[in-house]
Amino acid sequence: FEYDIACCVYTHGVSVPPRLRELAETNRVAILSTPLDSADFIRKIHPLLDEWFAPSQSLHGVLMEVFGVGALIIGKTSIGKSECALELIERGPRLVADDLVEIRRLAGRILVGRGPERIPPHHMEIRGLGIINVSMLFGVGAIRDKKQVQMVIQLEPWDPGKEYERTGLEEQEYDLLGIRMPLIVIPISPVRNVPVVIETAAMNYRLKKLGFHAAREFDGRLKEIMRNPEPPYGPENP
Image (cartoon, rainbow, N blue to C red; front, side, top):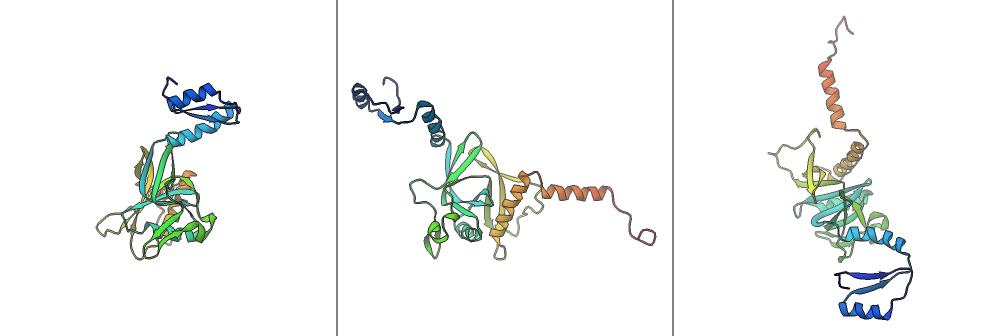
């Protein structure tokens, strides 16, 4: 107990000697006991310690699982993140956290998001309606406790003077805990079905992970046509 330790764990169900209890109380060190053997205990405690002490960040947004892809939806207050997430839930994707998302960086490069531990999970605030419990309304199949963050969706009001990405060749990135994540900026307008756009973005992300990049494929074919144009149609070349 001369060392600054957090606790002392006895494995194999070994009883703690009275003298050690006295020393622990004097030095204000917790004594724990487990029936597990040392190897099993170490194997089980390591992932928990990695998660507890991992670098973390809390941010305002909504975390959804869309077709197996962890999509973090961000944007200014009142942009419609929760309403967009609510419509996604009705279509099948699952809610992980709304309003406040806690993200931890595990194993160096894996970002895992969840709701705050001290706040009841899987609730949403819908302006004009109030607080709703997603698991009670839509069932446990509509929620997840945590999910790896794989892409970031940024919602913003449509700006007629801004040039938005139209081909997908210039990919944007978002820095999250030192990890560069794919960023999709979606301008909001009354005629756009944003949930469908988000679902499409998630499916397109999965295709890219499988090695198929639609924008680059399309661009390559166009360049090939420009390099080798077909002769014009006419009487000699019907």
